[in-house]
Image (cartoon, rainbow, N blue to C red; front, side):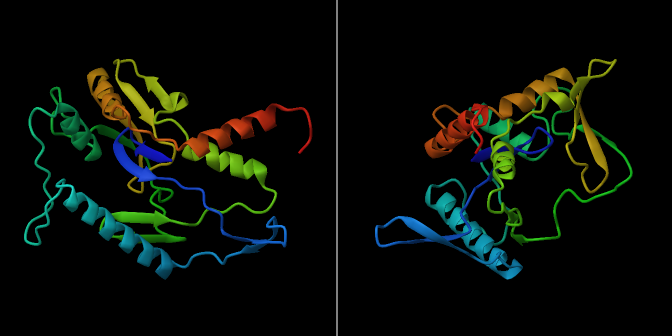
Length: 231
């Protein structure tokens, strides 16, 4: 699943994948019979993998002329002025506004005392050059409810209406699901600023975010759950 959003209504493109953690052994009739589970990944393995991913992504972007390699200067994307939507996405990805009186600024945030770290610095996490790879979530045999919960999580929409509200001044308040490590619990938007954030999250035409096999699996799971037969 391709997710284009972060927890603060910002553009943050990342992938969520469900992978089988092992292999099936086929019997003489070529039917899966025994499952051989693989060991959990290690931190060095995740770090090596995320490094490979980062290099391949950079190579792909360079090959297609999206970025240019320059060891002496920070990365700069030269977006033509007429590509307004790209500028909208670029501003959102850096938590800033493109339009209105707060152009170039970040949104107002409400904070509380820090009680946990939302970045997941512990556990099975590999990091390299701005790329992060999490590999610490697993589902055991027969845990269909947990599997469905994870599938629904990775297919969730960008905005949770339950955490969205409007204050007495007409400002839009979006409560974070999990506080940031600096104590941020809510993001405050003016109405136009919130519309700008929503616009940046709209996928471009003909860009598919859900593979066909995932859609079929979710439909099958939904049908099974609505059945009265035990399983």
